[in-house]
View 1 (tube, rainbow, N blue to C red):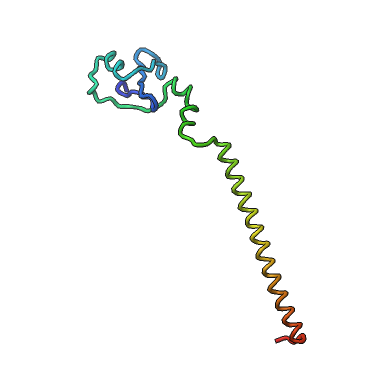
View 2 (spheres, one colour):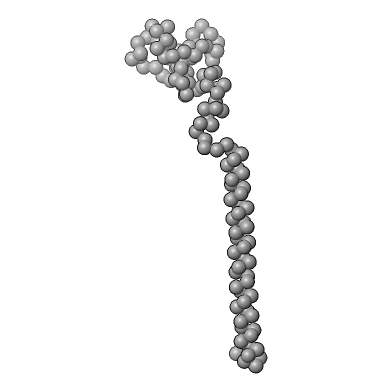
Length: 119
C-alpha cells in the first residue's frame, strides 16, 4: 500500500503519509516527494486522486470558474422560462377559443340567413 500515492486533482501535489497517520501527511510537489523517497521520477507511481487541503479551502472559487452563472441564477431563469411558456400557452389557448367562437358565430349567422333550416 506504500506505493499508492494520493494526488490532488487540481494542483497535482502529492501527499506523503510516511511516518504519519493515514491521510495526515503533508502535501508536496511530486519532485520533492520522489527525492524524499529516493525514487526516480520514472518510478511507476500509482495515484489515488483526491484534493489537498489548500484546494479544498478554495474549491467553491475554483468550481465557480467553470460555471457561467450561479445555481440560483440558473433556477431563477428556468422559473421565468416556465412562467413565460405557461403564459404563452394560455394566450394561444385564448386565440384558439376566439377563432372557434367566431367560426360558430359564422355557422349560426349562415343558418339564420337560410331561414333556420337545418341541413
